[in-house]
Figure 1 (cartoon, rainbow, N blue to C red):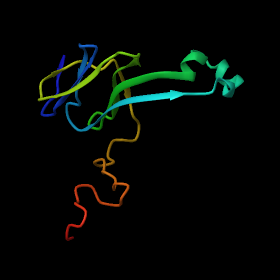
Figure 2: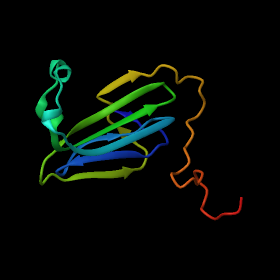
Figure 3: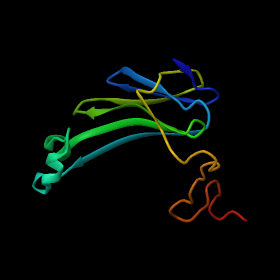
Length: 139
C-alpha cells in the first residue's frame, strides 16, 4: 500500500465488499465511470471479428460496466485500479475518504508529452461560465 499524500481517497465497493481504495498521491486527476450500451450485432465487421480478444457478446453489450483510473501529472503516467461489469441486483458504492493508505494500481503506463506542459486547465462549462465563476457575478 502507498499513501494518498494530502489528497482525499475514493473507496469503491461492489455488493458490500471493498474492491479498491484509490487516490493520486500528488497532482493529477482521477476518474470513475459507469456506462451501459447495447449495440446491433448486425453491425459487426470482419475487421472487428478478426481482432484478437474481441468477442461479439462483449461488444453487443447490455451490461453496465465500471472502471476507475487516473492521470498522475507529476509522474506523467496513467493509472488503472479496476474495471468490471455489473448485473441486475448488484450494488455499487463510492465513498470519499480523507487522506491515508491506498491500494497500488493494477496497471501503470507512461504518458508521453506531459512533462513541462504546465497545469491542466479546467474548461468552461457548456453554458459558457468560466470554472469557479458564478452566473451573473460582476466581473
